[in-house]
Image (cartoon, rainbow, N blue to C red; front, side):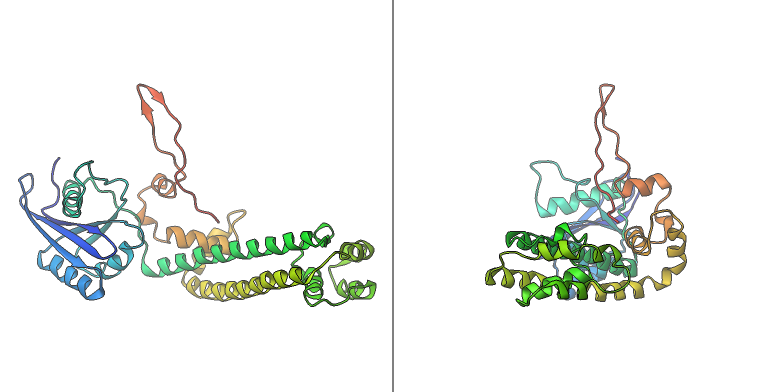
Length: 320
């Protein structure tokens, strides 16, 4: 392997410790090797930063080990060297040579020869936005899961409002659920009062059907269980609103980019914020559009052997 870096370092990152290996020497000659271990506390990471700068490393490579690489990156990205995040799958060591020291040396050796591909790590504001958009997705998933629980509980006590209302968590549906939870009488007058208002023309024609659908066998157990899920839905919806406000605040510097993305058919404001959170706004990170689609996992790699092309699956996609 041809060397391209004179002084570089490889980091093997774990939860409690980091093993660093610095290779220093003239190109294409056996380099001098120095290995040192550090803890993962902030004080230890600052010592690692000082040590790497003392060794005059021009480049430092570390593997993306779970979430443990993130605090290390947050400290080392301020250093006077180029910090590279490598895909752990691509730099996997040979079997039978698996120790922390050998892993660090292996990463440094690959990096010195230019065999470590740089992973895309956006700047901190984009990383913060990414955390929020991904958490919003989890919140929405949790809301839908709790709504499905309410739906199953209503079916269990033979309440059939899901057959009459397209969304049982709309205005009318929530009023009906509230009456059921609090064991209040639901008669024709109550139903007619619930369906009053603009945009409820179709529901007004179903008063009789809705009245029949709420005539079920509701026990106190059902009311308790529905209340648990319903209150959880309301709690999660409030958290979602808080997250939306934070996202709106973080995307303000990218108003122009969001306007451009909104010109794409099917891309809403929320979708635009997710796209920015996942790929950033600095497209210089990707030399070509092929690099971008490959990073997003939308471009399957080549899998050919003996002249035959085998199936290549997509490794990842951005859920919008």
